[in-house]
Length: 97
Image 1 (tube, rainbow, N blue to C red):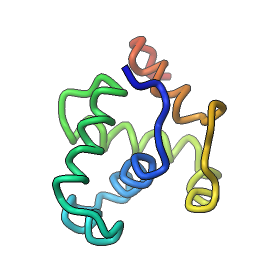
Image 2: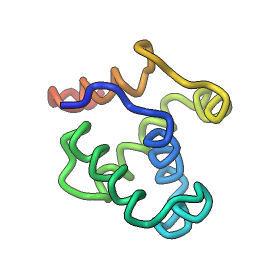
Image 3: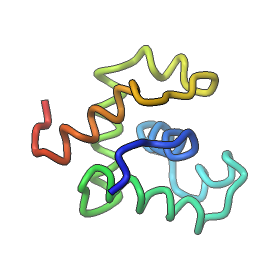
Image 4: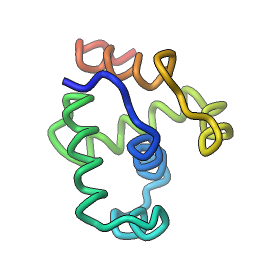
């Protein structure tokens, strides 16, 4: 199981928090809809979510709790200390707060 979120996956995760549609996100990122769906699938596995709506809800909650990350995002590439990775681990363990 992946325990690290990559930059492009994080871009998708952030865009989902803005309630953008998949096609719109794919177009903005200059990727295919299929690639977008692959990123969403990896996020679902990482967070243990059933569907896109759960990933979207988690994204909204995460960025509401960590607004400083949204300001930094495109330039900041997180490595092992990414708060989103910690959130993913806690979410998989069933701890939502």
